[in-house]
Length: 114
Length: 111
Image 1 (cartoon, each protein chain N blue to C red):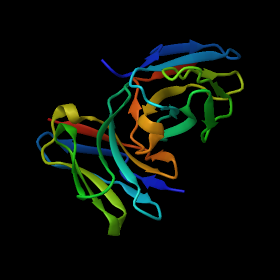
Image 2: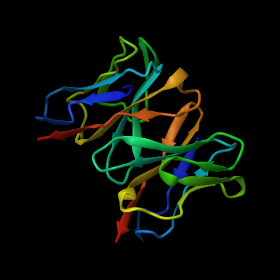
Image 3: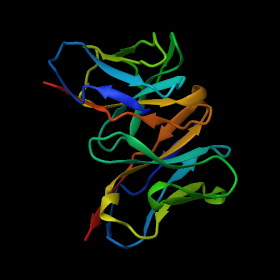
Image 4: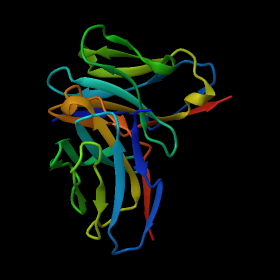
């Protein structure tokens, strides 16, 4: 069954800690994306990658980092520099570098900072 | 740069009634247009998309959307709403190598 998986579903972090959110896809898609969702604000792009070993900052990259060592995997690290990390995080992928802009989403990870 | 506006934050409809969710976009040419649905605590699911051609687009779950260039709109419709349609709906625009999402419309369905 093809799709996108994100883990964990819920994540709790103490202030000052870095945490890594996992995103894996078996759709053979080239492009992958990370979004942050806050109530009433829609989705905001954090980072995206259109090819292995390359990625670009989105609109709100400060306090986040990513890697793309494998086509199937695009982990997101929320660092202690992120001032307000409590949010719902969504990973998405898109075929052929997103040429038609269609994106397919994972189930999300809810991060709460205690 | 493109932008998307969903003017209705929250809409309540009775089960069996018709539904129209509004979406307006700003872009110099015809962009790629999408509607997604999100159930609470879940990811987004693609309902339908428009690239070109017939301006009335059919999607999954009985939804359709109509592209109107003169109004820069891409409204989502359903003739008869079911209780399971209660969710949040997002309109999105693809252009300039980027997808921009609206802020969403939360749909409540009452019996």
